[in-house]
Length: 322
Image 1: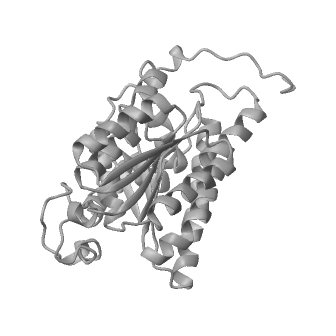
Image 2: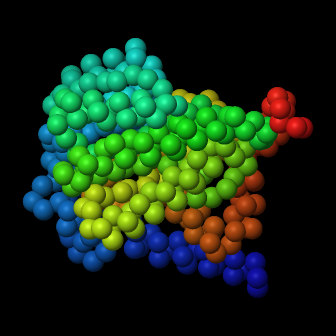
Image 3: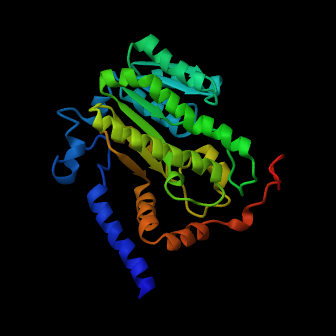
């Protein structure tokens, strides 16, 4: 009976979650503003979501490849002004050129490393200089990490926190006066690893849990102070970006979701001022339900979805004490 309940309760919860929390399937699709969809549709007024972004001023970080690059192209097709940033200047130049070809109102870039919070603030200052304001801040960049047993490298965790967490805070703090003026949006690209612990991603997971705590707390403060700036947390599963596929395709058994659709869903959820995006919903939403209802059962599923035999232990980090 205990095992039966562990299976039936999550399935019941999944059914309810799909009913209550499934958003519009297509960004440009028109759907009636009734029931639970009302809180999303109310923001649209008479405009379709793509029209809402025409002429809007948007910063996208981590925009030289993967999901960030695809977001830049979607925003360009919608006629937005985009300011893109990433480490590699040559890649950013190509993305900016394509954005202009696709119809962006304007497209610029700033290259540099988010390991420095000073650079994070510099990007926001550039937006203020060229536009005089900002409508949407999409925080998408991540630092280089590994998919393996934790080897005791505390310095790596510290550097990853600088990039994946502290730079997000620095950009948000710098951008907030402009976002308050425009009543804009903060979109935080996070991960299922920031909601559910899994093996081999301890440093990365720590940074994503930090984002969840900080931005969820900040949302409370905005509501208390009546600050009309939305915060959308995007909880992503396995996406077919080049970096993710290279790092985990030999370990993760399931197939990745498409980065192009993922990018569109992130933009949609931000424009509609959603509290949270689950993508792909078919895996992220049930995982979160199982986390609360049957955590040990979920832990087993997570481990069973991995080819653990393909993991090779790294050598201990210097000075780790091992």
